[in-house]
Length: 343
Image 1 (tube, rainbow, N blue to C red):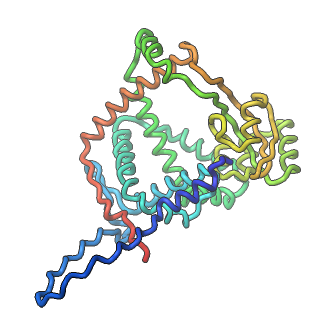
Image 2 (tube, rainbow, N blue to C red):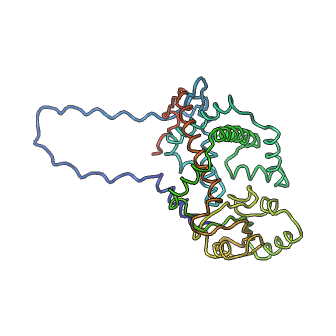
Image 3 (cartoon, helix red, strand yellow):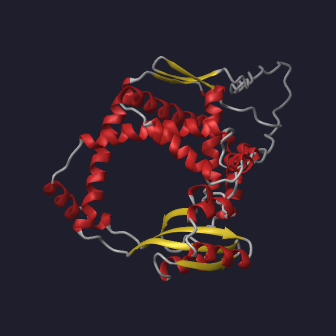
């Protein structure tokens, strides 16, 4: 879909698999001596993981997290990066991200710290989580198709997805409650608007959903189904060849001009809003709908005010959250997640 589709995937592999620097030229030889030179002690090897799934990778408060916990989160995070380029996840891609594992451990433990805070301060609507899971499952005709889609997005089992949906819902409820604590009046918002007009200026943006299929005949058949009242999200989940957006009902989110291939870009920014369009690209045929489009420039205060309030409350909530995380005793063991270098 995106122009950077395969380029980033390949560049990512190159960046993470750095080649060794050229060997330095030999130093000039010194005159022979009868006194043996002292041996230079070898540098200690960096500790690496033993691969034990039960090994502790970190502690947050009184709770410990194992390599198995970390690997599951890392797998999902890597899959999101790959899926963002329109590529289904495979285990082989994990090797390309191996050098990022110690750094990701910091984020992993921070996320678990936030989860711990949320568990004591918010409640998850389990019925809503179950409904979200069932809706995701309902987009696929068979368990096999659902399992294949899960694997392509980094999840090993349906229960892994259900658990992650629950965790995200809990954290989301907690973060929303934090933001609701911080309120800003009209005068503050108006003052921020006047002082930050340049920063508030935006580029044109289009929000689009699409269904990608290989042939024009398939695209025409889908258009006919949609005109007959078929559900766009369900068709996308069942038939779209874009693994990054199919599980989201074909939703690509919002993007600026020039981020998509030319024909798709033209339809997104010049075509009608809310109507079905069909365009061809190197990836196949796209049945798309522009759900929203905004013009470039500074939005009026009435439109910008909710966003300003959200930003101000978000910044205040972030400072509060950081202070709460700092109160938790967090300890990381990056050597446990560092993989040995292949020779």
